[in-house]
Image (cartoon, rainbow, N blue to C red; front, side, top):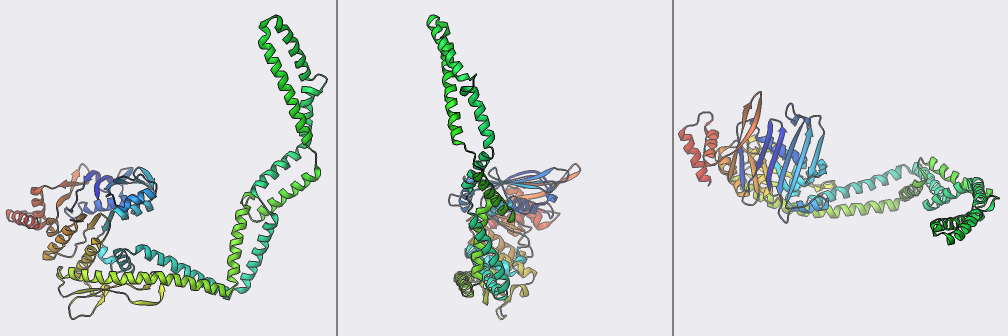
Length: 552
């Protein structure tokens, strides 16, 4: 659940730190006071699109941090572990937006992308925005809702992937049938390229050895000359150092027998003589191995030239030739398959079978979910001043299927008992849509796995007894999870377990938003304001107190 929300320099909020409670909480206040700004700030921390316009006027950046408490079985803990982010019984999601438009995200102090924030955000909170009812008029939103409610979102994504693969193979078969000649030319070119690289027989380790040997043979003359000079100085010249040092070492050794003060010099000279002798032996061994072989050098030069020529031809570097060969071979295999109509047709049939198998499974799950959701939403609608109305999710079949399955998903409504079911978009008025949409969202939220539900003015367009029913629905939801609701309706606010008041205050030359946590007396005053407007009377206060008492 959401424990803490910290906001800095966001729109008309300068500094705000809010600590949330469990249950059902109401956020109330005058229009424009900044109630929805809190929801927008939370959505930003959860990966919503960043805009430089949210930075408070005159500030360098805006910052929002949301701290969520995680239960031991929370999927968010698994997500944190899988993404190598510190997993604990809490997670901190933070977003910084600079005045220039650049934004940065963090999860538990580690840098995170907006996509990662959205993925984690989907596991910890669900925000129903002001226009959620209108979104339900779209077929894609209806499909997403029924799949999410039935726990089939992953299967729906799998169906979409399988459909794309099926269509890709179908297009490949059609392309092969219409472009046989051009495909044959491309296949011949690929065959020649692969054979050429196979003939080259390039091996990365051998390439390194070839370069080293070529470099050595290319400098063989200068290497021999240098070794000869070194041997002349150390052991083979008239003034060679090794014999001279050996003689002087022997002489000092004799003198050290007379005076022990020469012992250190004797040891050093003896060591030097040994070192010079070993160096001479090493130089002779190297000279004996080193050979001037012009034929071998020519062979190596030709090999290196062939490798570089092949690399230039394919616009790559020698080290990438093996990877290039594998890419060409894979494309050749694909082209050879394209030249085999029977193989292509079989692959297409296999892909279609895989798609239809997964799509059929999805259809079965949708039928079950549609029946359950239709019954529950219809029951909820009876309490929302829509007595006699019906809600049903129709699943008209598609002959050829689509990326989203073997059927369309269509929300249908009958406003009265004697009326036929018709698409939601063609039947519901504004007020009816608000009530139907709210019923759908509340029912769908009951099965949601997220611990925090946020409703941002989703009760627009309702009032009176219906508003009280909505409040009771949200209060019931709050028994199992944390529910936050931005509302203008006193009937809804009175059903909350706790309530905050958001108001604008003048500070110097600017207007800032302020949040007040209301006690019992404060709630009476706020509910009275929502009931009576500007002038609050004792009668209005008694009415507010009565509403709060009834709600309790």
